[in-house]
Length: 125
Image (cartoon, one colour):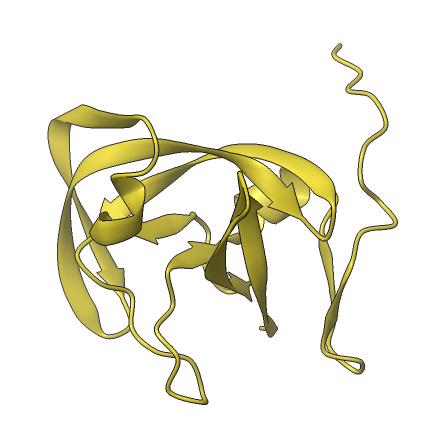
């Protein structure tokens, strides 16, 4: 499991993001989600994250950039995610499914993102 932190940028605003290959889904805190289109889930979803059980009621659409690359995904809205190893509040947790979709890989040795697999086009079969 690898974890790297960087900003997710939207219209000049930066949101502290933890890239966590051990998490399947992407999450965002409620305070930040209010800046994006939010959708109510038809059925609440229970999520166990960070040793806490969360009741997810909303999903939101995230559209911005990471390291200058355009990213479009969705995130489950939580009251809080927690803090990183330095005590900084995590605003977005980017999970494995989003990283896979956008070719984001974690370079753990250098503690940075590898965007060399970012798709230039999507080929659908």
